[in-house]
Image (cartoon, rainbow, N blue to C red; front, top):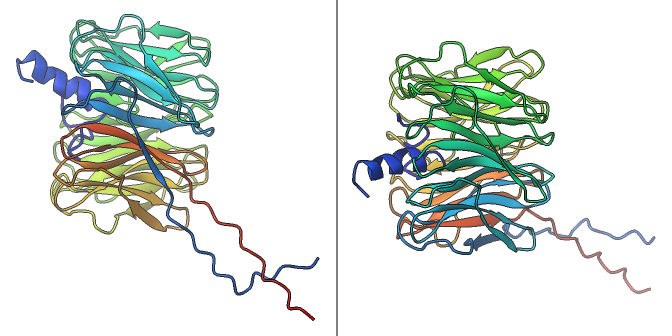
Length: 408
């Protein structure tokens, strides 16, 4: 598989089953108060780190989190000490539902249940890797019932099948499937079960080319059913796209400055209910730059976090945009270390690092999702290359104390 948002030097959602599994298969391893003069100090938001019960502690084991819903429930998955994958939920009070194992999941290395997204009701979706490394989509009801599905036309060979990383409030699921020729195609599954496949204009038809939805991202599907994603063309160049739910029309998106060589171009990482899209483009020097594309006029705002590296595989990678237009993501510095960031709608960028994040190349903090309150979840890679989840609490403004009235 080609590098699909893997150049950032982290080991993330689809990169794990596609890259590590291929290594494995190859044999490698009133008074009116007076507030006027009162300074309002705002302490930095707390970052809570956590490990799912049963998560392994070795290199390339541990806890990875990708999604948080408006209530603060987090969805993710973990690799145990045998590198088998299991889903989990973390409630706002810190309690876990784990393991979540979908029927048919394999029990070998990098097999099992991968969780991609969670909607406001608590339904989750993702995919299962079976004992033959074939992928199958699933969703889990809020009551815990798991349903499997395969898109017609999905392949049944190794690293083929159905991947379903997105679910919206109405229970619509979006993802992609890999056919028997290893070509990728997008799909949307209605809440009633009807599946509609689609291909972005210009998508390639060779192995590892085609149309993708939600690779390493979990909110490429908004409440209306509009989908963002990207395609890989016949020259292995990336192009973003927007598929409207109302009529199925697909608009190709190319950010200004995007490179036109193999493994360069434009990718979409998230879409909100105004159809505002965030993502990144890879320039001609293989450097990542974030962007914001407004739905109203199609204009772009380029996002480069101060401190982001300017070498190949470095730069700024937005991962999600919430309803108010706040963006979270990561940047990779000049040493290849990952750091989180939050960009508010006025353009202010705040950077952060989870406690315990490693400082080597490919280590550090990967921020994946912010909910409507700007609670952010993601994971960090420690100095031993073990993964751990984190929650960055929303910024709170302390209530000012009123200035006492002077005594008469």
